[in-house]
Length: 282
Image (tube, rainbow, N blue to C red; front, side, top):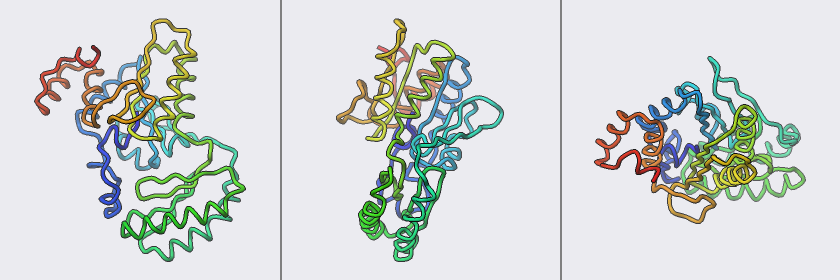
């Protein structure tokens, strides 16, 4: 499940850039959605992951309190499998010499940081980020576009690409995308036992890679009684076969899947819905 725009409502970039918080409504999923995730993760037959483009720290702050929930941050560059008393994070190697990339990129990024008040550099295991979410939105966006152009020329010989997130410009390996980590998750689960149900939900272009991985996994599966569902949040051109309107409907689906009638009744009382649990699967 994607995080921003799927588990939580995505806010406009301008609103995000003027505040020192994530570009999400309240940053965390609703209480009912969190309870539904907790219920789903408590079932030993289920394996649940949240896959986000956000940082490891921010993702843990948002949903790290859900026991047994697997997490994948930075679009899958690092991940923590579910299970165990404490989360153990692992980091993927995409064959990029980040020390060499930093030697070339950091002088350019430092120049833009000096000229853009409120910006700063964020370094992770597999990315170099330039954050401008505390800057004036218009000036920050303009400087980010110029930075992409200059870095693009300087880093042409490296196997990297640029990702524009909410107030952050990142340099990441070209091979890094959400579909890679989803493929790995599904293959690992298949080794343990037959996978008979897959649900993948996301809201933007970065999630299309996840949908592709699910489609490929389902087409290669020998399981006759298995089901795979890709669900896009919002109507748009997509590889997903199903859609929901917004993040609140994602919460409704998770509550229904949890099988907890009390949660479903609470959800219905909040939104005035009279739908039954069976409606989600008809």
